[in-house]
Image (cartoon, rainbow, N blue to C red):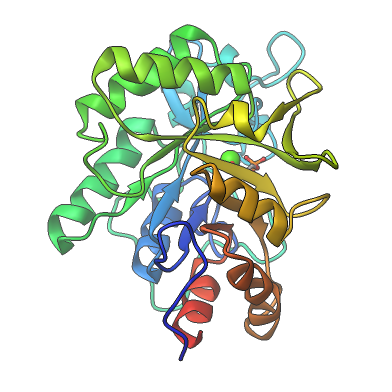
Length: 303
Ligand code: G3P
Ligand code: CA
């Protein structure tokens, strides 16, 4: 088996549990994160939104109706079901339901350790789960929180304060903070310095081949940030698996010291996983956001 990787550090690429084990169990739930840990994921990815009373919860959408049973329990507010219009106590009364083609409410051989595995977790609960797992196993599983846009200064500060209070201050391996706003990423980087923290910052977006260089499309501004500028405040890039993302782009990012993590790996079978991951392993991708942690781990075991 090959032992050398073309990643920036030469180590095996990271398996990043995208929204938890979201191909198997309801996304962004403690049960789903726990299954991803047991499957061997290196990093847990919680997207973050802010409740009406200012608490951070793990939720991809800015609204609650796609992934929970809120419509059966509450009337719409201000015309919808925005996370920011409901309190944490109200959100805690909801059940998160399976959404994807494969996600279910059970997984063979897995019994969640917590009483209510499919509720909306707070960011604190996500960190508690990972910290407890690390303490028990001696591993250094990282977290990869995403400040969903628009990420206000208050939200960015709260994310960092909670991470620092939980020991995710740069001392736990493979811990990143990500956002689609490049200005937001720059702000997070500056705040970390002020707070004495040193987690990696990842700027999200879409790879762009500019012809005489490379950049990343910033969906929040519609602009393109040159790789050289990103390297001024970011440690890595989280990029869509399409457009101009290829081995040449990854090599250019590596030359500037930037890691590249691609999203989203959703192989539809064990057989399809090898074909999907292999070209990106060979291209030197540093990590894979995947809904199917086990399929990613098994591909790396076989490689
Ligand atoms: O954060 C990387 C990837 O998760 C971006 O996609 O929409 O699933 O947050 P999304
Ligand atoms: Ca995300």
